[in-house]
Length: 456
Image (cartoon, rainbow, N blue to C red; front, side, top):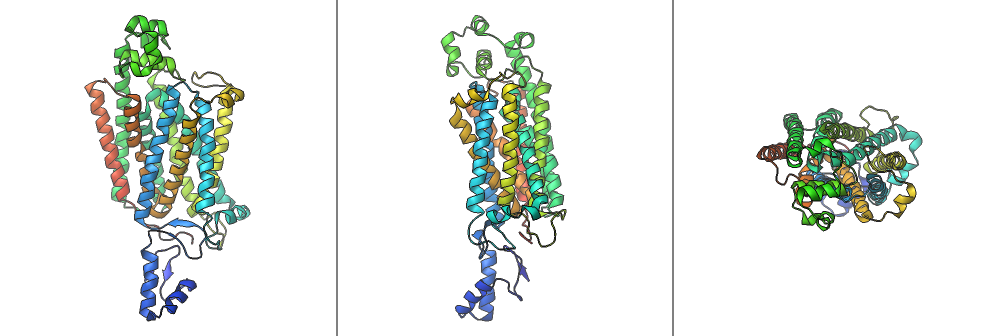
């Protein structure tokens, strides 16, 4: 009979000699020794393996805990990014700050959790694997390709948040990620998740995408009705028109808190303060950016899965697979490089109507930098927790973190007053979208399995 641990242990041929000697010293007898070893293998939900150089999540319960913590983190950082854009901070400036601290979080996780204890050939530490790139470079390339997908998806999300709002952006992008990414991960993980529950959840996510598009369409119609013909005739409404049409004086317009959320005056005052102007833009633009972000996101989890489990057998015989922390480091490195390169380019060549800036202006822009730094740290730790949970319970199940829109929607309604004073139709669609999303997440969590081996 075999039991799951860092390795699959055969109780007739014990491979963990140190534990066996310790059991023998306790004078437990042959059956007592076997019970002791069995207990060690099956009753440590999160452990540091004996003689291993890394911290590994083993049990389904430990994996689900990581996934839930990741869900909280990954649902919060987009709200901080959206808040800064609404306050007028350029998305290029925000994303540069975010990218730096996001990478620092990955370095911290890799060095701390990937460097505990001794390093062995079967389970090398993070630092040991950095020196083995001549052997494990195929897996490194998979990890870095996943980082490119995440970086481009995050960058697209930054602009989509302005066009379609926090709730619809996150629900639509996350649902596309699940429909594509989770399906691929299921087959890469050798069908370790329950197919009936997993694909029922995927179906619910697909319905949520359709409802998210309907919510955005209905919300846009509500906005046009509030603003009348001005939404169609001009790209931006200046303060004089705002005051003349809606009776909002200059002091009220400067202080958004004095304008009732969801009113036409609030929407116009918001347009005047935000960094990306959206009045007069087609809803197709926002949805197109959101769908592109979702497709980009759908690539990173399967690629990370390939990097850590080598399902395509790209590594030579005897070469250890990348541990989660090494893969996460390379993943975050490529994500960082792409983000820095693109955003510095966007400083001088802005897109979607964003103001032009420069690297000097970015360095001197301290307005909101603290929130951008916090967003990067939160996202970095959230990604790390997702991968730690996915390695234990299957990456298809770890895609349950795509429930992050449930958290983002809370922040969107609480912080930004999204959907305030909307039509009953919009409210009904919003509730339907969130219900389908909640059901889908529950099904994905219930489908979680346990990986047979970690390193062999």
